[in-house]
Length: 149
Image: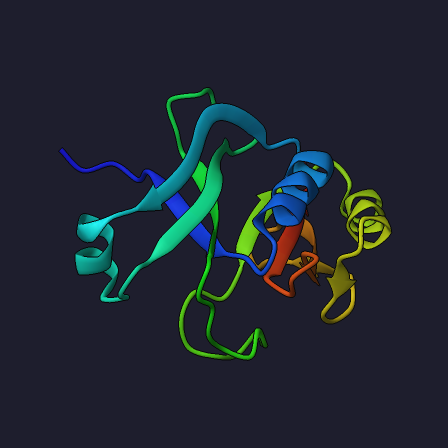
């Protein structure tokens, strides 16, 4: 069996980022809070005395059986926290929403940002969509999309 389970985001402040995803996208707590440490975690991460805290939130549109977004913070953090749309690795999290402009307003009101411009696109097969790249409060890139019926 193979099934997709979760996406992990390492946050500077997991509590604030968890609230952002709950308030803007309606992600829900499913009682999977984590406070992880021990020899097994040190071995898995390769970090001596690793300590992770955070929570799993079920993604909007799904029941509590997954998929989730796992938002964690380590006691020991590294990196410059810079995210760009064209760098290696996971590029963005995409959310289909009823209204891209309204959702973008919520993102901005809760402290997120915008990467480019809101655009309307028409595909060769006649499908139409609205897109924008935004960021959460820690700079992780989000795609907001809405498809015309």
